[in-house]
Length: 152
Length: 237
Image 1 (tube, rainbow over the protein chains, first blue to last red):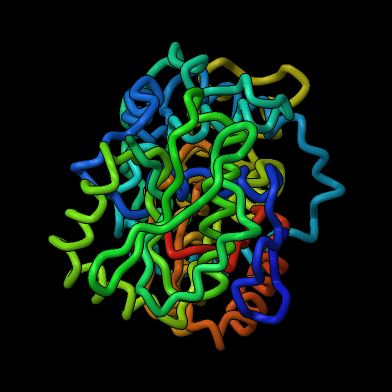
Image 2 (cartoon, rainbow over the protein chains, first blue to last red; image 1 turned 180 degrees about the vertical axis):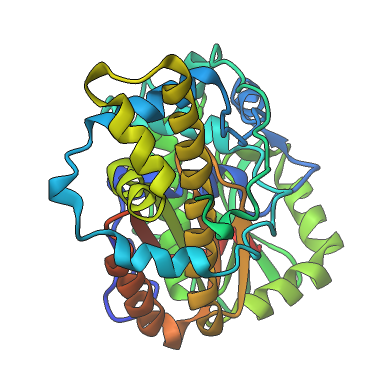
């Protein structure tokens, strides 16, 4: 895990700046913050792309096959220690996550931008280059809210 | 002349702008526009202002520094007012609302917590608790089993992985809730299955980070939990 500017609890001036920091807060810089409607927002191209829906869990044959393949490839011996904690988590309620579903329609676009930021290029990486990013597939079936029953 | 607007503060903010740099290259200088009790931190608008790394970083850095000195309302990136008078107008018209929010935000900072899945860890966890998944996995390893077996395994895994992530996200939010003033959750996205912002009292920030750290450690097998902050209160402005 990574914690940026610590420095004793205050909002340490300028700490943790730079792309390393920006990368994970880009959605906040773009999608949050005060919006003043009577002002114009620059880069309308960018804004448009920001409307891409964030919800991206894909339920498709391709996804299933990819999951199965990833699972087949797992080195089971090396991973024996993981699960004990997980069981506890899964027993817990999943409510709470469902809140706040309304906001953040921009996340998809933010991801597009973070991709470009992450490449480590300078200045040229504007959002407009990412315009062609395709929309996401069908909505996922939210059928397993009850997966606490552990499905086996 | 149009002005780029970074943030709104009360007039009691120290507003140490000398060492800050605005957007553009070379970076433009910052100045303030005053209302009755509020100020806007602005600059001129560089010709090539764009949603680029350069300008995003400058915008964020200005807000980060101003936020370190006092309560601010950070504007979302990229807002340009027609002229200084337009800014004054907004400061006048929304003075009450802005002052109220500034007061709420006073002494508080934002932390953002994102979680990225560790697919291998998640799959292992699913295998360890699902006999059916283990059976299907065994059957389909090394090219064995039918297409339907592989599909069934994949579907089961996909569901279980998502359920696990939802549970994990809820667990993290619940664990942090007692330490925060308020919270703002974004829907899960392709990259982050948890994306939550918390408004935290400055004097509880260390405690918050410690708690988040422990969560990251505890769930490290299945997810990478990233804690960012203290940040300007983007999600609560």
